[in-house]
Length: 217
Image 1 (spheres, rainbow, N blue to C red):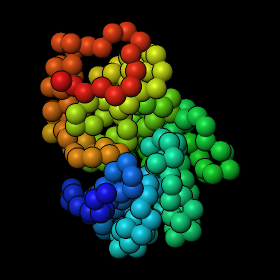
Image 2: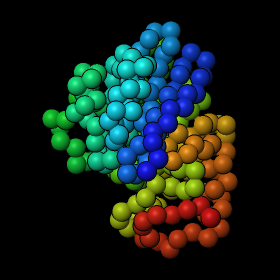
Image 3: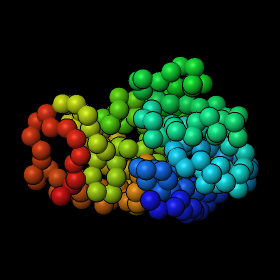
Image 4: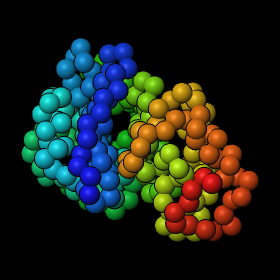
C-alpha cells in the first residue's frame, strides 16, 4: 500500500492541500485554506490517521469539516480529527445512513461554506449516494466519489448510474474546461477531459439498469 503524499495547489490566496493516497482504498483528503486569514476547511476524514493529522497541524486552524458522503472510508478518522480540531462536521442535506449525533449540520445545494473570505460552493451530486456533494473552490472542484479521471463513481442499485451520469452532465460538465477535478480516490483530472470521457462513454453506454464500476472507454 503506498504511503500518503502531500501535494499543494496554489490558487491566488487559496491553498488546497491534497493528502493521499491513504488507507486500503487509496483515499484522498483535502485541506482548503485561506492563506491571508489563516483558516482552513477539511474535506473528508479517511485512514491513515497520522499523515492526515500531520497535514492538519501543518496548515492549522481547521474551522469546518465536510464529508462529501457518508461511506466509512471517508470518515474512518472521525474521532481523531474531531479531537484534534474541535471543528463541526457537515454533510449533504440529502445524505442517508448518517447518525445525527455524529454531525453538526447539513449542506443543501447552492450553500456556501466560508473559509476566511473564501466561499466554497456546495453542489449536490447524487448517484454514488443520495446526498453526495461536490465542492467548488476557486478553479478546483473536490468531487468526492462522483467524478474520477477514468469514469463516474461506483453505483450500487439500478437507476443510480443514470442518476450519476445525469448529475455529472448537468452540474459538473458545464464548469470551465480547465477546472481541476480533485476526486476522493486516485489522481486528478479536469472538466475538459471529463467532457471527452463522457462523450466516449455515450458512444457505447451500459444497458439501462446497470450499476457497479464503469469506465469512460
